[in-house]
Image (tube, rainbow, N blue to C red):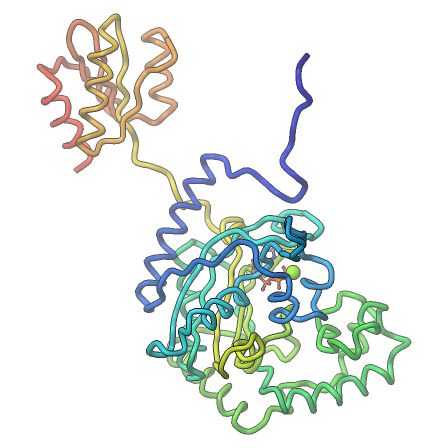
Length: 413
Ligand code: ATP
Ligand code: MG
């Protein structure tokens, strides 16, 4: 009996070969841009102790409250598939005593992340992020550099119609005082707020700025703004970050309503959006998290970083990533399979992308297939080898494998 058809779980997807090529190319370009800025590759496990995210991302965030894939291992320990990358990098920084290395430590990562969200275009339950972290310095050039780096990466990926929103959340103390003021403001207007926002007046009042609920949005128009209540050194830090970006010629909108979905941010926060994405407009974002390492049991260590969604970069991109050079096609015309195989092998060893007839087609079928593959030439193996140039249609005999390889390499040059 035939088995039931299986499907990938909801919110996940298969990367089919065309997309696979684009992702590879994006990875290559990302690595090249990141390397130029002095960031080095870093990997952490795909699952971590649940406690890391509860402490590192924040109990009151959407991510921890409702988006984590959490499970018990056979020993009864609670583990979670990582929903974001910063907490794991900070955990590793502490675990390996990386504060003893020359600072800042600058790393980047690329890999899968997991959030139990409502799946839709650009929003999945398993998705991929590329991200950076720079730990061990609060120098504003690191904030500016992170932002420029992401701008450059998006440019290299062909993402257009990009807008950069920028704000500062200030330091922990001034922020605490501000949050009390905001809570007072929200309590006076409880009746106008969504249930979700009302429930989180104590735990996470900043989320009120992020609400879609019309009543909440209207009420928030008159809300006190954190940017107007920065402590002097935080205001100075933010001014310096802006001056550095101005100097680099990168345009941005200062947006006092920008809040990020993670609790750990301090000072600089930013987000890149693309008009090409529709509702899921965020391509990538990040900011400074000067208290996080200490919160995870390490020494007081400032840090700044960002993450960007690979799938959203590709959705917002110009579709020109990836692809391979046109191949040479080795066709069989009554000739010897072993001779054809040997020719294909010789071409491949010489660095020529080569396809070989492997499905028993007629010669006519093979030429059609070669055309479909965009082959630049077909080597027809019969009694002898014929070389057909697909651009000119010209066909001529070649003496041997070595000559065929010479012609093919010449086409690539
Ligand atoms: P959103 O507002 O779209 O939910 P977010 O604020 O939760 O995004 P971050 O946690 O900052 O996103 O993650 C950085 C980037 O990762 C996002 O800008 C987006 O490109 C990507 N991303 C986040 N969640 C998903 C998801 N569920 N599916 C695909 N990409 C995602
Ligand atoms: Mg989200």
